[in-house]
Image (tube, rainbow, N blue to C red; front, side, top):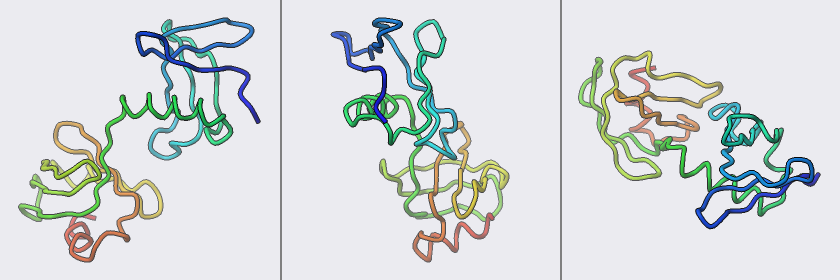
Amino acid sequence: MSANFTLKRDGAGRLVYSDPNQGDVAGVVPVRAFPISAAEESLSLVGPDGHELAWIADLATLPSDVKALIDAELATREFMPRIERLVQVSTFSTPSTWTVETDRGTADFVLKGEEDIRRLGGSRLLITAEHGVLFTVPDFRALDRASRRLLERFL
């Protein structure tokens, strides 16, 4: 399926949405409907006035150039580091300070309470740090043994 619209960047770097019915709309923002549980599905392109211009049920159906623009725009707005290894946990009670290695480098954060670790289905986890930064663990069973042992104390 091909999209009935096009996307491009203007001279200011903003996304410009174009379709035969609405013409060109600059300053378009992609918004995921389910950014954590179904990141590659259900996305809306919203105009600067806050109204939806297009609904995309599945990003995989888009032409590669349009998908690349949307992915690049989302990457600049979304910050959710993926935990790859737990290095150290200060204490097994909360609050505790965690040192982790992520896909974006080493990070230290405070876990206020065990309720800040949420299961998202299967073995996926979402960890909310003290200042609201969200960390993901796509599959806690895939972590190294030492990391799993530290994490299991909180699950």
